[in-house]
Amino acid sequence: MIKITVDNREIQAKEGANLLKTCLENEIFIPNLCYLDTLAHPPASCRLCFVEIEGHHQPVPSCQMEVVENMMVKTDTPAVRQLQRTALELLLSVHHVDCGHCPANKKCDLQNIARFLKVGLKPKRLGTFLKNQETMDDHPFLNHHPNRCVLCGKCIQVCRETHGTPLMDFADRGFKTVIRFYGQQTANPVPCEECRSCISICPVGALTLKTPKD
Ligand code: SF4
Ligand code: SF4
Ligand code: FES
Image (tube, rainbow, N blue to C red; front, side, top):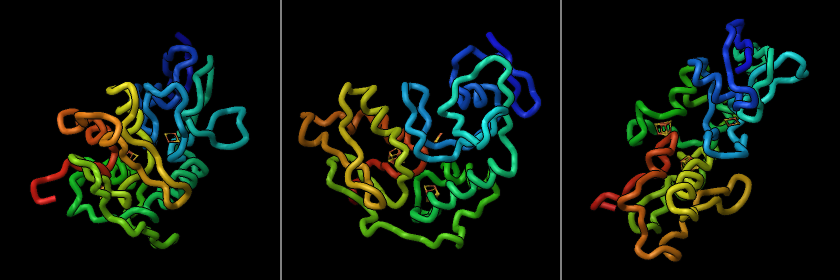
């Protein structure tokens, strides 16, 4: 074990452990949406988990860092908070905030992070840009809601871990990027009705089980 210091607190950590994971395990909250500890190479796509580390000129995403002996970390500096708030506002600018009609309401990571960073869920600075399609319903058991999706990729990873090959993936590029299922063509029978791992791991309400009304 080695010693690192986070926000003036000494922590024992395993050398080479992921810094974000180490902080979370020690009850030091760093906003994050796309980190999964089963991923060998975290995608660092949400850009929320910034920290300052002594010796680095700029804040760095903690999910990309390994702990080393005597590392000095600060999670709550003005530069860190500014980057995190901007990243969150970007996510919210492409998000249909309608919590009252969302199954994730009150257990949503986006809500929790917004509260933590003291950012309203409807910031006006960047405007709002939504995709045309509110619900993608071409899967036999699941619906995907692109305007709630934060494109963290956790559903793809958990599906890969559970079934060997993921039954969904990112499709299209840039603003048009969505999660698209292809399991209905490649797996027969489709395991999704019983599995539901992707719904459970989704940090927001972007995947839902079809109801009899759908
Ligand atoms: S995903 Fe979260 S922030 Fe978005 S509408 Fe649902 S509860 Fe609200
Ligand atoms: S559907 Fe959910 S888990 Fe999958 S990429 Fe979107 S937000 Fe992440
Ligand atoms: S958790 Fe590090 S960039 Fe998303």
